[in-house]
Amino acid sequence: MSTENLSCSVENWKRLKQLVDACNNSKRRCEDVKELIQELMKELPSTSDLVSQVKNKEVLLEIRKKELEDIRKYRRTILLLHTRSENKDEEIRNKFDVLSKDLDETGFDIVRNKEEIDIATGTLTKLKNELLYRRRFMLEDLYLIYFVDDCYMRYFKKRCHCIKYDLIYGLHLPSAPDKHEHSDNEICAAVSHLVNLLICLSKICDYSFKYPIVFKGSNSMIVKRSNGEYFDFHFLIVKNRTKLVEALRFLSENVVQFRADCGLRTTESERIIPNLRELLLSCIGRYCASFDYIRPSQDFRSVAALIPVNPNLSMVKIVKTPPSQHRTATSILDVVTASPSTFIATKAK
Image (cartoon, rainbow, N blue to C red; front, side, top):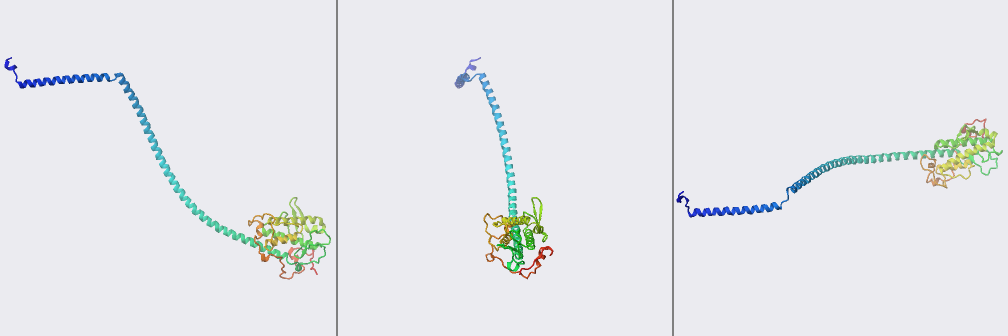
């Protein structure tokens, strides 16, 4: 090679020197980086440690995945429950609306039924009052038939020594009919009227006596429930006055029973006529009845309802009404349907 070919300019030399310097600098930086990498490599854990860490991370990842899946399931469950709850709430609201509507309809029905009940109650009260008034009117008629003033009704002349002279339809019924000073005809007629009056009282008031009675005019009877024995008043009056006392006691117990159910107390149970007379006066409001114990039921089906709570004070007196027409001596026979052969009622002089 010639000397000309190896010669170079100063500029090229400078460039070459700069290039060499740059290469040296790069080499030094590479060595520095290499040393730094080596130092970092020394500080890094070993491969086994990294593998275990990776496995741990994988396990943790699986755990987190399961937890995430559980959370998703829980979320789906919560959403399902929430949906069901909303549906249930909607169903409850619908039921509430239906119940509210039914309640409103029930309220209207209650108001309508109350109005109907008020109307029915008013009608029932009216019918009850009419029934009570009609019964009182009929009882007043019975009173006027059987218990008018004695001076107009006495058919027989008083021949007995009874201090208490009890009359029914002008006929004397003694408290002790076993005495021979009393007429058989008069006692028979009085008992027949008494039986007829009690039967009318039972029919009017729809009341059953303790001892059933049968009206057959002068042959009227009373039945003893315990043994079914019949007591024929006419036969007893004529044949057995002692047995007659027992039969009259049964009649007296019937009257006492009726008075007790009305709330009236009886002091002289053997006096049938005055007790029955006072009972009728109390029922028609012409006698101030004194109740010594609690007043019985005021239900219209009870005989106690016949007695007015507030009687008519202007009418509280012994009724003394003369008969509307003069009665003949034989008119009693028409009432008790007895034959003249059984007894004859003659007018007192």
